[in-house]
Amino acid sequence: MNSHPTQIRAEMVANVLAISVSVGEVIATGDVLLLLESMKMEIPVLSEIPGTVVEIAVAPGDVIQEGDLLIRLEAKV
Image (cartoon, rainbow, N blue to C red; front, top):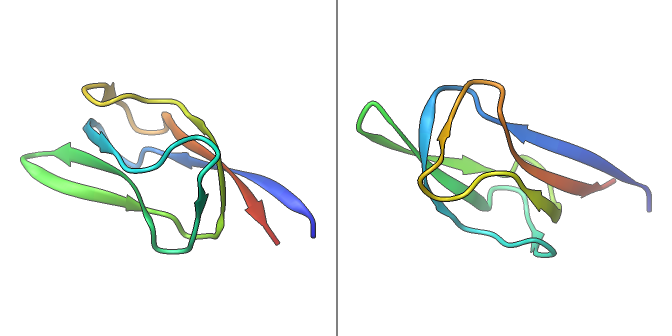
């Protein structure tokens, strides 16, 4: 199997409420990676692919901007 790095980036300005995964964790499509808060709404960030978490670039309480790196996955194809 080949692996390809995938970057999960912020789509909006938000606060990081919680991180649901850890580095080295194997995740499936649809797993919740982290929970964001924007405009008083909680927004789960879901994995669109299966793979392994290789980097978490944010921490709870961080304020993120559109385009910021959140998580990097090593996707299995």
